[in-house]
Image: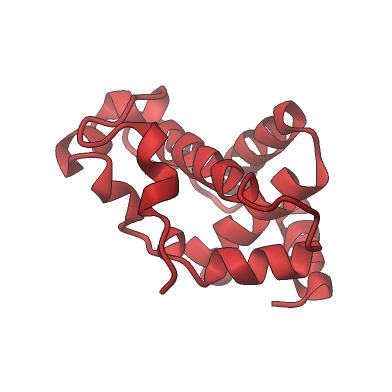
Length: 148
């Protein structure tokens, strides 16, 4: 994905005009990587989390303990992307960063199941508040991110 394509995705996300049919796992990654790359981390977290909640509502969804926004999944992937970004000693540019990130196992939808049991991840508690992994600690993320 080019820089311009990622920028268009984020603009569509922010305006709630990005097609819901294209709001995929990968689109979530692009959006999160964009904010993490371009903003201080505290601001990036807020933009990601509040943005997902807003996007869900704008597209007829809900953010409840049963559906919509999932705090543990969102925070896990934020932390994973941040840890991956820390691997780079120098700035390689957003497009290269996104390409590198997309070429690893972190992009797989089931990546976090290496850290969480499905039972915990699908719980109401995990949806509404951050739950620490019950299989492997977050400190093992770097070792789990492998090239595809």
